[in-house]
Length: 399
Ligand SMILES: Cc1cc2nc3c(=O)[nH]c(=O)nc-3n(C[C@H](O)[C@H](O)[C@H](O)COP(=O)(O)OP(=O)(O)OC[C@H]3O[C@@H](n4cnc5c(N)ncnc54)[C@H](O)[C@@H]3O)c2cc1C
Image 1 (cartoon, protein in one colour):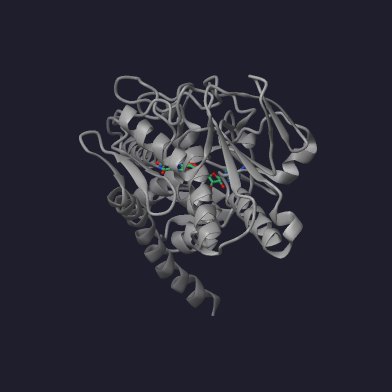
Image 2 (cartoon, protein in one colour):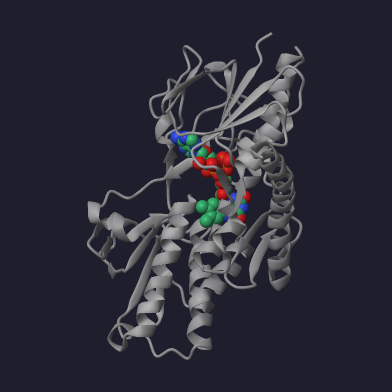
């Protein structure tokens, strides 16, 4: 019986699939990621706004995987996938699989701008991007503290994209600055965050009460909202919007669109217009039954066929279901149909303030913040505990 399951990507979707498959007799699992850690994107807003140290936003993958006898972790960059011959090409290595689970998420789509803009812009989907942004932010605050001249200069940040991540980042940074500014009685020009929303509102598609609460909070914090606006051109420190508005900026955060992980761009599998892979009701690639695609990499739908937004919760649900179906397929059992759903949404809005939509219940303010923190911790703590157990094993082996 064939038994090598290769999982590409060790984050919300990939880790959930790995844990579900682990310790199953007869299965060998290889988990591959380009980083030796899982970056908790859902806590990225805290890192960017300097509210949390970076080590609190990661989970060690070698330590986590050391808990499972049948799991091998490879810290490698995936170069491409040859789905005809069932081979994954890594840097300096090839791996043959029987079943493949693609959990590679997506990457930030950078607006087509001149090359030097990359020196003062970033996305927020990777630890590197979030750190770059945080370091820029800290550095600018420091310069304003040191230099009287610099402290009088305007300080503008553009957040391009007003979905979940853009809103969390804009609110988090603005709140941090407001607090810092007030508590240090700084005589410096205020930070101005410009949040660019292509639609009429922020958080397009969410419940109207959530949109209203979020918009009010952003306004209260002093974030400048540009609705129904699209970026037309970005040049050295100036963004031109389609309506003709010019905004000077010190740093630009791309939180608008995403696209396929580069290593999958040439794979012969059907993709949706925004670069996600089309899957069947069992989460297999429509044209290849030995490949499951989960998380942000897949065009996931609910039971009624409505597209689901890319979130950590759907990533985890889909990772779990794909793993169940891999097991069922090995046991020659009928596969389980997908029943993915958004159970609720929690959005951090700077400081100890959040909004929560659980369908029947909607909350905002401090109670919502506490629930948001609990959700984050219920995910992170068991992984940290497992990783600490695995770390002891790695250390014992090293001795
Ligand atoms: C700032 C921010 C806030 C967010 N807040 C929330 C929230 O509050 N709630 C929520 O539900 N969702 C939130 N999201 C969305 C959520 O983080 C994503 O939906 C989730 O991360 C998707 O998980 P995933 O496992 O599919 O992919 P990812 O988390 O993107 O992981 C993909 C993995 O693949 C690896 N990889 C990619 N390419 C390669 C390669 N070539 N070789 C090797 N490894 C590779 C990466 O290193 C990574 O570990 C937020 C996102 C951001 C950016």
